[in-house]
Image 1 (cartoon, helix red, strand yellow):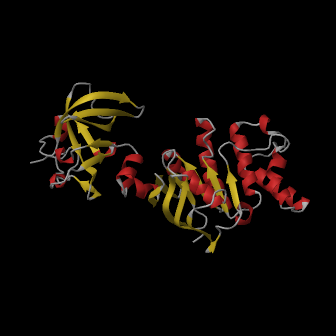
Image 2 (cartoon, one colour; image 1 turned 90 degrees about the vertical axis):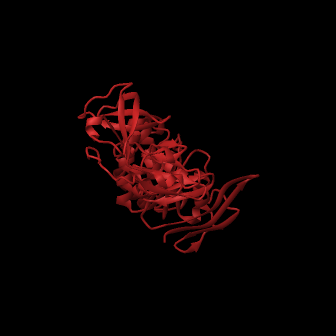
Image 3 (spheres, helix red, strand yellow; image 1 turned 180 degrees about the vertical axis):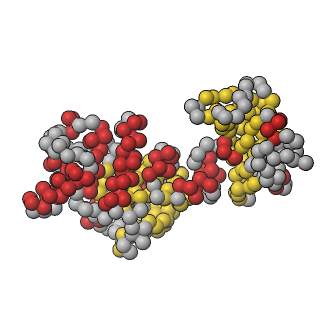
Length: 354
């Protein structure tokens, strides 16, 4: 295991920012720390970097405890949200800074900087100053500077937050390719789930200082471990009384059970699309939103509103129309636990129900 964290805790005054967090990361992985603002993500990152000291717990790199080591001794590369470039230095000198601090030979510095200039797509910009660069170019300089001393761990604190949406999308793909080419273990903080899902090998969901779940983006999406994760990842509608849902009888076993339902778990259509409908509920279309390649449909069923998508290839619906609604599956939870449940009828659209 390249990085191990065991029972990490951190307080700021009376505020318990990180609560007994433990995890392991394999060498070469790109990990996303994802969660709402103030959840503890950056505190974890700063403790890994040695910029904050944990109150208790252990941080290990390659099996060696590093709690007592300075950031320089840990071999950390850190990319800040604000770039933190030296305004009076050229691109070349910014990238070379860490190598000069380590008093590397001049020839080695030049070779390493030019290697990174090529790798990060900055060739031809070596003699420019930060104010002469775009936001995306400045962030590439920050990446190159962090990689120059060949750290064993790269930490990134919301690296794309200060960049406009179009450039941010391009840099996501670029970062993914860069990390794969360099092969360095990397951890980045983000509150943007789309960014984490697109870039990370694995995601760690952090909320209120606790690690809610760790896994691949797909595993977390299809099998959330906690109600928080189910609500936080993707889109979902909450139904306070899950027993109202046709086909989910298990929700009515003496305990108040809520349901979280993703749009893709719902089918909505006209009667002739479902034919005889013992597994469906009747609903009323409340809103229709055109999304370019599909419709976003809001439909009221039994006093609650569900959201789903409908193909443009199907018959157009209209606001106020009565439709049939089939919920294929739902994430159920109550005070005793949480689980993914399938509609007991297990039917597909256009299937005749007898």
